[in-house]
Length: 337
Image (cartoon, rainbow, N blue to C red; front, side):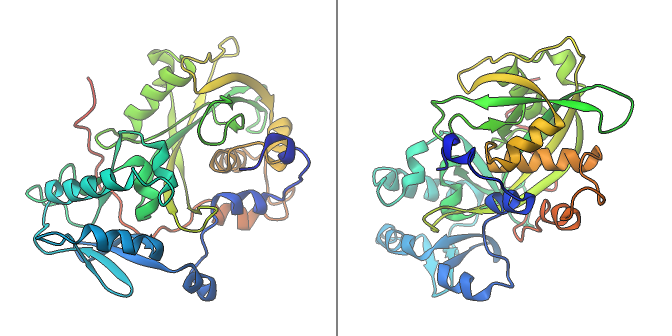
């Protein structure tokens, strides 16, 4: 992990910033992809993720039971035909992960066990075999092991300083030094993963109160403005995380100050766009949060074709086309109304 002290000595191009977030090779880099040695995770005959070859012996060991769970080939891992629905698939994965979480050396990402499920989707939405449109659900901290598509929300909080689009300041959060991931780094005002059964809008409202003490009557003014998408490759090159972040903007009154509500945020600062951009180039932002800021800067004409040489590549790279299916309709069965 890059420390803040180290980050401050670096000056990154904005493409470098995106590469830190979107670090998995593209199909054109076939040599590197082959070297990385991933197998495709198949559900309902549809590719839904990727699993590193180092996990295969552990899957083979789990398969040593009366009814094997997985069919394994040289290039793919799929459920056996008898696992045909959400419940059976989710239960099988949960049983395997319960074994794996006792082997943190082999599966370090499970040290951050969340007790929160993420849905895994295919193109099949038959209510007899799916739940909320999902083919199965996986513990959040294990999503990178299976390389399945995960979702979250990020919200930019900003204050207008003039009539033109770029005349704004942005609220920036400093992550707690005790966070297990990216401690002490800069973050968007509000951000959070989307647990299975929660919609984007509900997640924004929930995270707004939990992270920044934003009252419901203000948070409801948040506007969805698009997405960013990317695929992260872990430092040890054994986990991948395709992610889509649904981005919201919230214009705030000049006299409103977000306040940390839990232990995840240390403080909030209202910064000029120059200050935000300087911190992005210094590597102080959590990688995907930096990309959310760049998305904001493009839309608000802070970055333009005239002042940023990499403008075209930036706009293209912020929305990587992810090959795995997503939900057609967000499940809401866990929401409180």
